[in-house]
Length: 270
Image 1 (cartoon, rainbow, N blue to C red):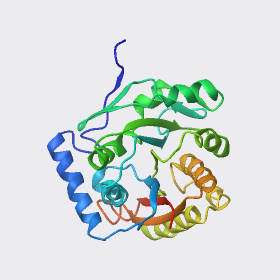
Image 2: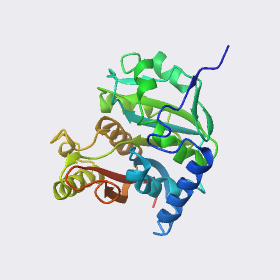
Image 3: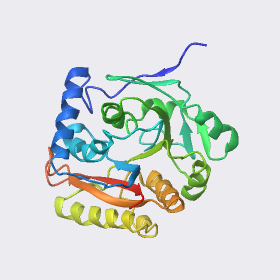
Image 4: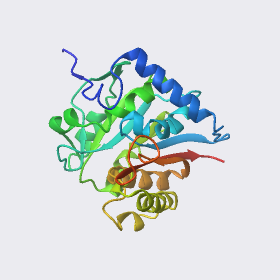
């Protein structure tokens, strides 16, 4: 059978299409992030929340998460990103065999077929949503530069039941898995209001406060994926740690309408 490839659709928009330029940019962002001497100690990194805006806006925040991956190895990355363009009931499982970026091809895990077969009420194919979506694609070059080799299980998350979805995913998520949730924070508030709301959201994530995370629609565009991760993290005993916060008013945007970005690590152990 001929392999099905999901091509990169947002290169030269969210990030450089030229491989050398893209790699150089990510390496520079990782160098800047590593200068803060982030250290998780002996604990095992199990999950990350990362932003998915254009690299000029959110790249440094994303790098604070992925810079921690250079000495770590995972067989599979479970990547959850919100549906921005085409609605999804539950989570959309990829129909492709491979995801392509300017940095090369990423093979897809065969566990997507398992989810479709075992939980058809939670997972489905939605090719239109997957093909249009940027929230997964924007994260991938960072992961490729950090991990070098991994299988990908990408899910576009729509109107999903967080607890039920986490329960379905939990048996698959073993020590060889890294879970990544793609999400920006508040959108188009003025600078001071955005900073206040974003810090409330970040604190609610760290506190596993699902009630607070339902208090306002404009908290995070990837909230459905965040809820799934929090249910999963609670079941697995993972602990969150804020790595970095910024917004577009700090980077390359004006301060009258900003978008917030946060990087959070979830670890297991001390």
